[in-house]
Length: 199
Image (cartoon, rainbow, N blue to C red; front, side, top):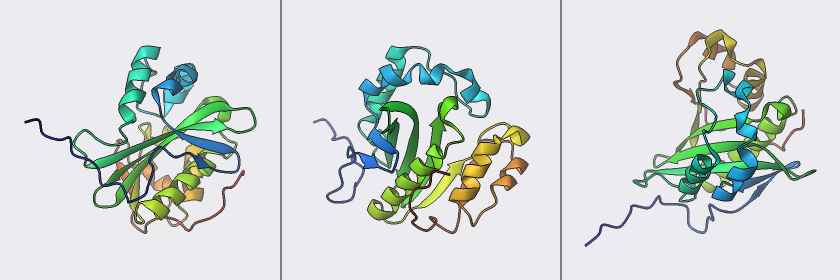
């Protein structure tokens, strides 16, 4: 008899495939169909100066990766793998992604990535704020971690600014002391719920 695949215990009544909305963005749960729109976006090598990733090698590879994420969970069911494509409402263009790995102990690890043409306009902060509200409201007030990118003193000033505004109780510049891609834990929990900002 085949063993049933373990399932992450999503909160009762929660639809992990539901759209999220902010003032300027629609957060769409990643699907394989997003690959055709996002493949070109992720070919810009300037993105990877501060991110320990490589551009997707082929459209089919990216579509397969996104298709695996539609389960919304890890293979053994110990984490919810949540990833959203960011669609700008004014022109319906996809501009980046945000993601959260929610663990059984109600902690969460966050990440975000934008195309270089869309940085410095408050989109990352707006999208992450919306995601944080979702995690707070629907995933039992998780504690969160933000991965520290490689690059040491080369950490992008815009990312530092975004982190500083999101997590006002912490000093993201301290991450410059750590040159390895380890997790930065926010011990005080989630920041207060606020409206999305365009600054």
